[in-house]
Structure formats: structure tokens, C-alpha cells
Amino acid sequence: MSEGPTLAADPVRWGVLSTANIGVKEVIPALIASHNSELVAVASREVARAQGMAARTPRTRIYGSYEALLADAEVEAVYIPLPNALHAEWTIRAAEHGKHVLCEKPLGMTADEVRRMIAASQANGVLLMEAFMYRFHPRIQWALAQLAAGRVGAPRFVRATFAFDIRGRPENIRLKAALAGGSLVDVGCYPLNFACAVFGGAPRTVAARVDVSEESEVERTAAAVLDFGAGRWAMIDGSFTLPWHQHAEVIGERGRLLLPRPFTPGQAETIARVEVEDEVIERRFPAVRQYQLEVEHFAACVRSGAPVALPPEEALAQAAATEEIYRAASYRWPR
Ligand SMILES: NC(=O)c1ccc[n+]([C@@H]2O[C@H](COP(=O)([O-])OP(=O)(O)OC[C@H]3O[C@@H](n4cnc5c(N)ncnc54)[C@H](OP(=O)(O)O)[C@@H]3O)[C@@H](O)[C@H]2O)c1
Image 1 (cartoon, helix red, strand yellow):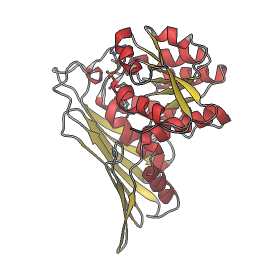
Image 2 (image 1 turned 60 degrees about the vertical axis):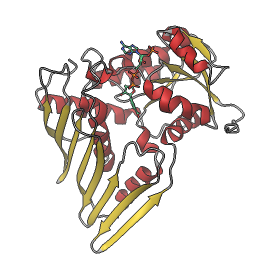
Image 3 (image 1 turned 135 degrees about the vertical axis):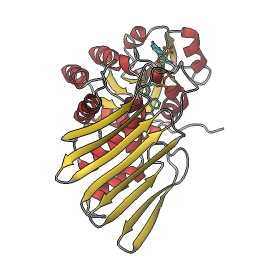
Image 4 (image 1 turned 180 degrees about the horizontal axis):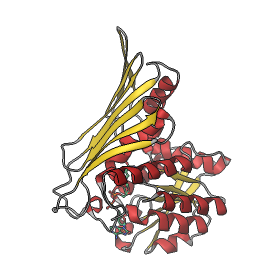
């Protein structure tokens, strides 16, 4: 069994709000494996659930409420993987307790919520970042740098998609209106984020459709055409009712870049394919733990005071674009 990493002399001390699946499966293991972070507290509405964690990290303190964890003076940074509707409230409360916040996507339900989250982090001198972990994968960083350098010419079209079928899990938070579920904010947010990263900002205008049916409290498929101006477009979609798939493609004036499985590549080698005129290059990237890269980046910024790689203003643009997409589809949001 691994002895774990050699810890930095002064690791950032983290608390995690809830026993969310994504925390238990990915981010808590990433914190434990990281060289500059230490998991010191976990809170759950059901203390017994959080106690399950203690077996793996016996020095971690367990709290039966999120508020109690925020009152723990040793906790410097919190990871918030709560249902979407609770992100703003607990980010603001954490900031008011002087904690740095890594919060799951979507950062807020609306641009107004994100503005209030940014204001709270600034007023309390703490860092805030939306947890788009895929942006820390070396392949995505390489792809964005290649595009910026004109490898396929000026990017003109982005096509990106992410879907999985959760119709068999009606209790899932993603299908609950009161918790701000919906396919756009859960999976379509990745294609949207990728398009904005490629074009360096938010779309100017959007056209969109969402699929609503009486079977579901929330939309389960969303598709949008985003106009970034100057002949630059993106076509994005996400769904909860289609078989698992994810893909991203950028067409530039000289060629195209393809990224299979761009958002959750798992622990596997990944490929980026670049086609320029008659030349085809497949570049391979070794497996990495993107959640670990994300938390290590955030912890390094906490220690150094450097700005985070994904500034909250990007999250604000993402939230505004999300609202625009729902508006264009005549979908009331939040429900
Ligand atoms: N970046 C990624 O790769 C990724 C992947 C999946 C999900 N996410 C995001 O992470 C967040 C959590 O997703 P998840 O699938 O991990 O969720 P989940 O397993 O359903 O966990 C959500 C947790 O929130 C807590 N909670 C507090 N109030 C709740 C309420 N009224 N109803 C249900 N749970 C409540 C519960 O923890 P306690 O009972 O322990 O307090 C619950 O375990 C979402 O914002 C999602 O968008 C990100």
C-alpha cells in the first residue's frame, strides 16, 4: 500500500462540506494524495455518513453540520460539492468565516448569485474558484495553447457535447428543481465552458432549445448555438437521456483539433488529434489525476497568494451565458 505523498512543510488544511459522491470518489482521495493539502474536517447533515470517512483518515474531524465545520479555526479552505441550489449560500458563509472556497460547478445558479459570491470572497480576502477540474488536465491546457498559437488557424467553430442517461435514478439531485438540477447546468456546462475558453470570453448572443417533459421536474436535454462575434460560433449540447458520450472539436481556418473524452478522461492515456491540411498528428498524454492537479493548484494559490487559474469572473460569464441559453429556450430558470 502506498505511504502517500511527502507533505509540504505547511500543507493547506481543508474541510469538505457534505459526503457528496464526487467528494468521496474523486476530490477527497485527491486531497489525501496531494503533496500540499491535508484533509482536516468533513461535515455531513448525518454525522454517521461522515464518520464513514474517518476510517480512511483517522485524524479528520467529523461535524454533524456545515456551520460547525466553518467554525473550525484550523480549516483554511473548503471544498463545496453541495447541490447546485446551495452553492451560493455556503460559499458566502464560508467566505464570511475567512475560508478559501473551491466550489463545484455551476458556481452559482445565476449571474447575480455569482456576483454576490465574488463580493463575499473579495470582502473577506479569500480565494474563490469554480471546480472545472478538466481545465487542469495537461491535454486541455496544451490544446488551448495550440489554438491560441494558431496551430489550426483562427478558431471558427466549436462543437462539444457531454451526456449520460440518469433516467433510472429519479432521486438524483440533478433531476430536482428545488436543488437547481438540469442538464445544462450539470453536463452542458462543460461544452459551454470549453467554447468560452477557446474563444476567450462569453458569447454575444445565443439561440437555444431545451427538452422538457411532464415526466421530469427539470430540463433533461439542452442544445445551443453560441455566437461569439466575427464569424465565431459554437454548437453545444448536453443530455441526461442519451447514452454516455463526450467529445470536443475545434475547426479553425487551416485545420481542426479533436479531443475524444475531453471532460472526464479517467485514469487513462488521452489523445489530441490535430489535422492541418494533409498533416495529421496524434499527440498522446499520459494518465493524470486531474482532480489532484486542481486541488494542488488551489492550495498553491492559497499559500502564495497568487490568483487562481480560473478566475471567478470566468464563472460570472459562464453563469450569464447559462441564463441567456435558458432565456433563449423560453425556460424559466431557476425553476
Ligand atoms: N467536477 C466534477 O467532476 C463533478 C462531478 C459530479 C458532480 N459535480 C458537482 O458536485 C455537486 C454534487 O454532486 P454529486 O453528484 O456528488 O451529489 P450527491 O452525491 O447527491 O451529494 C450531494 C450532497 O449534498 C448534501 N446535501 C445537502 N443538502 C442536500 C439536499 N437537500 N438534498 C441532497 N443532498 C444534500 C448531502 O451530503 P450530506 O448529507 O453528507 O450533508 C449530499 O451527499 C453538484 O454541484 C455537481 O454539479 C461535479
